[in-house]
View 1 (cartoon, chains in turn yellow, purple):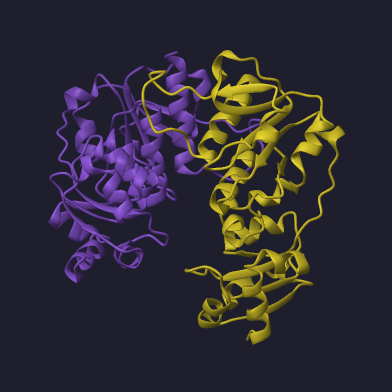
View 2 (cartoon, chains in turn purple, green):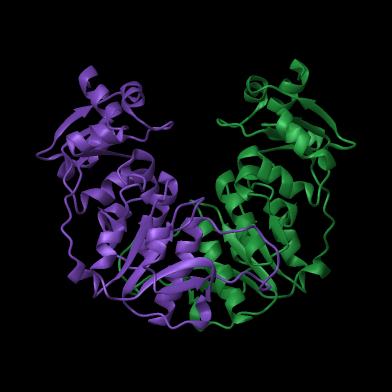
Length: 250
Length: 250
């Protein structure tokens, strides 16, 4: 049995403003909730009885409601709810410019689509990138659509929202970005550590941030110079760039 | 002014069955319609007056309706319709096993998400892959969601639906696929031509098709062997594999 107030609270967490006030986010489905529980402790769970009885360890010490499929449907933010809805505290990650010098870091400058954001988290996770720095106008990684798209990568990849220009002005390492008039990535030296900037889906990298990029890259199409779609999707471009950085370290 | 019958027809084209009978598909928005018109002739257009007056060349010889924003909204399959809706004939691409020997070709074995399918078309376009062969249980590239996600790549990339096992049994070139227990792609020889198989989002490559793959690849994560999300999204994996094949040809 789940209260109307709890259902209302879950639905309110679909809104960024409410997430900010409550410092909570929603994750759904057994696989995602399991992965997140490896590094985070939920504050509330609503689940079908079969999930609860299987997950005694997770449930222990956490407030929970055992719900019917119908209640789960009403509480869920998904079209097809799956067994469990969990509320987690939004983590407060600490982070310093100093720390950045010894890592490969992704920087997102105005990425708007929550699905792209979640997919980028998953790419970062695959390629061992532990920190993603987002401009304040980047979509919220704790948006339920983004959370679901991360497929659990949020358990391992940390997101930080900050003023990119201010941060870059304190950083003296290599800053990479992709541009249609950049240098062919396959002909460029790539460092083991550094910042890779990815831009907005339509507008690309903003002018101010672009001026602070000291390594301008380009992902060549094939055959080079042929007419094609004018750009790759931001998550696709991110994956190709990250794969190439990591290939060089093999 | 657009008739109720036409609106009904456009909406019916959201269904695969109806698209098959009518041999038509829907594309929306000025950019996408423009790109498609470079290689295809629409059979019908509904558009705002400003689009019609700008695109006299496209409209010439095509049946069209000038519509109000309200009519466009009612006719559209999109949440946010943009200026123009066009109906195009589904192209009948001819295709032979012989032809495959001289190309790099993508093969999709049960890809289900129309968004992934459209993104893969865009990747193929970028990397100069002209033919994509799909199993009959792969999502329909003429699904409106897939068409929109192609961003116009459909003007240049040809999709074929066929029995993959039958086709592969007539093909004696290299057949690549990615597997969690495959060989690190960066240590393998990759041919200029061949078939790259990508599998279903959840289940991967089907057993029958898997048995016909003679080059089993793996995209290494970083650091190699660390725990991570269990797989990359199929469009992401496609982009990394295609980029690596084309890098070798540079």
